[in-house]
Length: 313
Image (cartoon, rainbow, N blue to C red; front, side, top):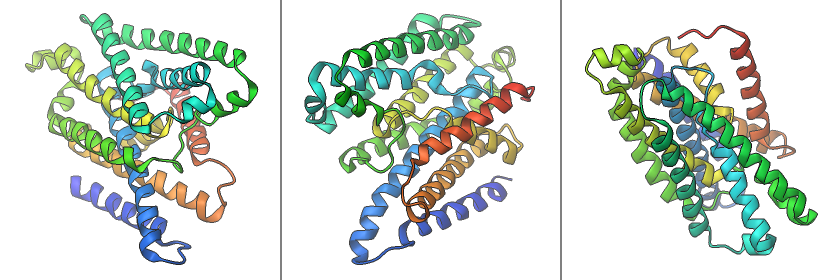
C-alpha cells in the first residue's frame, strides 16, 4: 500500500519541481537553475517540516483540528520581530546578522516550548491543559505585540506587516543548509518512531497497555515537533493553517493510521501544493499576491469545515 500511495505523490512532486525550475526560464541556465533550485529547496523543506509536525502533533493530542501553532509559535515569532524593531529601530533590526537572528529565534521558540512542556506536562490528561495553556500564551503574546505596534513609528510598523505571513521569496541561502540539516534529522527521528506513533494513535490507555510509556514518548515527540516548527518558522515566517490543510488531505487519501505512510505522504503532498502554488503565482499571476495568504485562507476554510463536521479518528 505504501508504494501505491507514495509513488504517485513522488511523481507529482517531480513534475511540480520540474515546472518550477524550467517554466519561463531565459538566459543562463546555470544561474536560473541554481537560483530557482535554492527556492525549490526552501519550499520543499518548509512543506515537509510543517506537514510532518502537524501529523505527529495531531496523533499525540488525538485531535485532527489542531496544529502545532496552537502552542503559540506564530505569536512568539511575531513578538520577537516586533520587539527587535521596537528596541533597535527598523535599521537596527535589518542590520542584524541573519545567522545570529535565525539561531536566536529558533532557540527562543524551542526554549518556550520546552518550558511549556516541563511546567504543564506532568501526568494524565495534561495534553489538553497544554493546548489550553498554549492558546492563552498566544493571546498574551499577541496583546503585547499589538501594544508595541501602537507605540512604534508608522514607517517601522510597515516592516512588521511583512513578517505576518510566510515569505518564500526571500529565504537566505546561508540559513537554508542549517535548517535543512536540522529538519532532516528531526524528520528522520520521527520516521524511526513511526510504530510508536501507531500505538500512540490508539489512545493513552491502549498505548500503556501495549507497553508504551505514553507520557515520556509524548514529551520526546513534542520536542521533535517543536524543533521542526521552530526552524521552519524562523526560516520563512509563521505558517498557521497550511499543516491542517495538508493533514486533512493526507488522511483522506491514505485511509490508514500507519505513520510510515502518513509522514512521507504528507511531506510529499505538502511539497506538491506549495511548489505548484508558488509556480502558479510567479509564472502566471506575476506575484500580484502572496501564495501564503491564499494557502492559509484555504487552510482556514478546512479548519471551519472540520469544526462543523464531527471529526472522525
